[in-house]
Image (cartoon, rainbow, N blue to C red; front, side, top):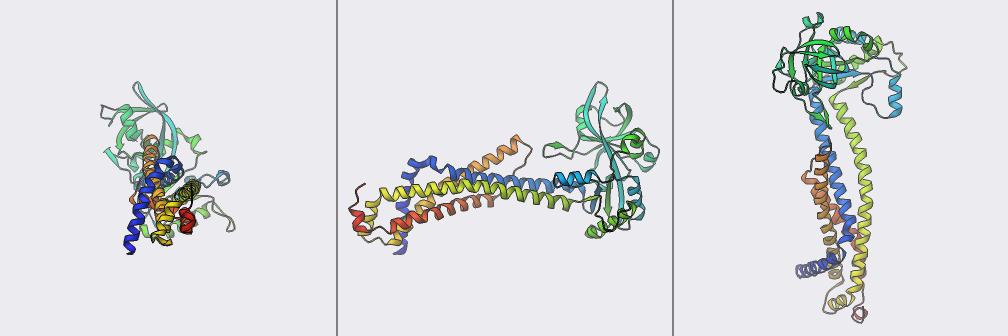
Length: 412
């Protein structure tokens, strides 16, 4: 008997739903906008998390970097770090000689310069001066040719390894190996080409060249004194990252003569630190945007409640007839609750589709990635159903409370 009454309530609810949809389709915009925003935001955040996790993997396991600025958390943090002393060759040499946990310690400096080959050129290329063990702290590999040796670095050789963007721009149909390019007015012979690293949020990671660090210091001796060194450290045991960073911290504080009551004036960057920072940032953005989309859901829920109240008024006589032939209060309550949930669910499904299309459009027309996962679809449907259920309670309760005698005599 219960199943029969439930089936009857669902049947009546569906018939009434189509009547409400024809009349109030535009009023579901609140639900559609709210759900689509939830889907789009979650998809973009998921995509960003996956993207960052993939990109920071190029740092390799058991690798961390020492930098002046590191991960900056706002304007005040930036201004504070601006006052910090630059990292220099002193810190690099101390870490190279004293770190017991380190397998390799590499250093790098960089400037932006124009690169020319014959009548072709590429502007604003990152020119990096690095030690010969640079590849040990980076997962990026040389795809063609080779990297320079420590002997070549000590000789201050005029040799260079180029990124794939340089190859595409200057040597589209030519083998670049052994070709001579001009970097800021100085000639270098190409000995290798790095494999393609791709882009991060639309910024290419392949528009760079690497020359020996000692060669770099010859031509940028004035500039490097005003630049802070980046020091990469690959540790022997990736599971001892904390111990290795503490060892490096102790050495750096001693070299930089930092008093025991003062904080560090340098930063560590590791894949875990970058990922934690991004998850923290995206979590805050997620909460803010979901809060904004909740306003649309609440507005949509209020609209649904008003639609259902109007529906109850218009169908007062129908409710009276149903009660007169034996329908219980629970049957009337169930009928209108189901109708409210279905109405909201219809808007939710439209919102899921709109959110998916929106996230794909953002991924297509901007550098922001998107990853629509199945659970986000279920979440959108669940949110819409919950809104319909919550805001449908009062109209359903009001309908179930109607006196059958008064309802039968009601004239609309």
